[in-house]
Each structure stands twice: as C-alpha cells, then as structure tokens.
Image (cartoon, rainbow, N blue to C red; front, side, top):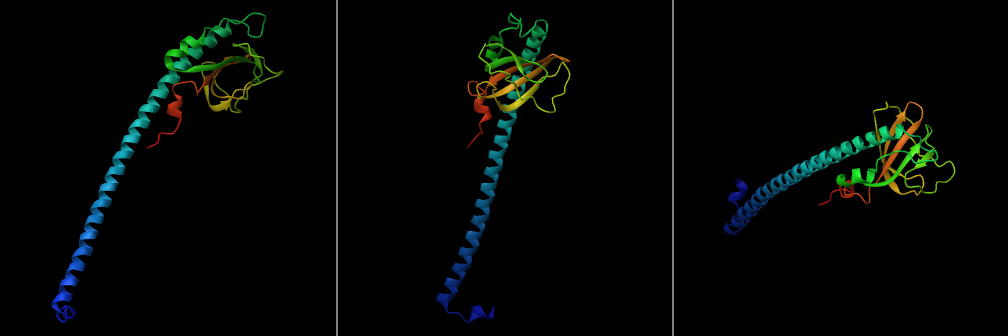
Length: 192
C-alpha cells in the first residue's frame, strides 16, 4: 500500500469514499437482484398454480361433455340418421348448458366424414364433409376431441367431439362454439 502513503489527505478521503461507494452499490445491486429473482419465482409459482387449476377445470368439463356425447351416440345408434325422420337424440344444448359450453353443430357422418344429418337442419353443400384426422382409429367407447378447427358449413372456429357410432356406420360429431362458451377466457393466454 505504498501508493496510499503518498496521497494527500484529501485524495485519501476521495479514494476511500469511492471504494466505499463502489462496495455499497455492489451490495445493494446484489440484494436488488436477489429480491427481483424471488419476486419472479413467486409470480411463476402463482401462474403454475393458476394453470393447474384451469387445466383441472377444463379436464372435468370435457370429461362431463364426453359423457353426454357418449349418451347421445348411444341414442343415435338406435335410430337411422339421414332418413326421413330425425334421429332420436337428446337435446345436448340442455345437457351442455350447465357446463357453460355452447353447441355450434351436431352432425352424423358416414365413415368417410360426409355429413348425412344435421341436427339444426342447416343447408349443407352437396357432399359437405368433416375433415377427420388421418389417425382416427379408436373403439366405439372412445371420443376424439379435436383442437380448434373450422366448421365445414360455416367455417367458424369450433372444437369437435367425434364419437364413432359403430364399426362401419360413421360418426356423431358435436361442435362446441368456443367464442360463446365460458371456457373461451381460459383458451386465451393469461397475461400479467
């Protein structure tokens, strides 16, 4: 520390103040960084909890909706869609209402996805069909739930429940209007 001995008293004071200031800024900087990190971790933990709750709610809602679609498919299997009379299918609007899901469309299709019956009797273009997923292979008890797709008649975004009617006859397709359902707020990203 020979260098320090050659400084005048004023320069020694400035030097010590400078070193003290640098050390103080460094300590407070580390404390601030630590506080920001803890705050970020707490916020991320809250978001994870919220995400888990929303996912659990959506799973329960979709599970209950799947049960209703299964019951409707069972009723539809006992009738002949596309014939002169409407098939005996329960009004799913009443069943889905407590789940806060808005039904957009209910269709019966043949095995290739061509619409053979429309619950709401909308005018379908000739050979209107639902684009069935290429890997659609499941048993009669299973229901396939699509991602966000377009309705084949109106091109509105919907989520489809696709349930096979039996091994060869086709599918029951129930479309959920995400925009009119209360789950729409869960589908949008949660923001700060």
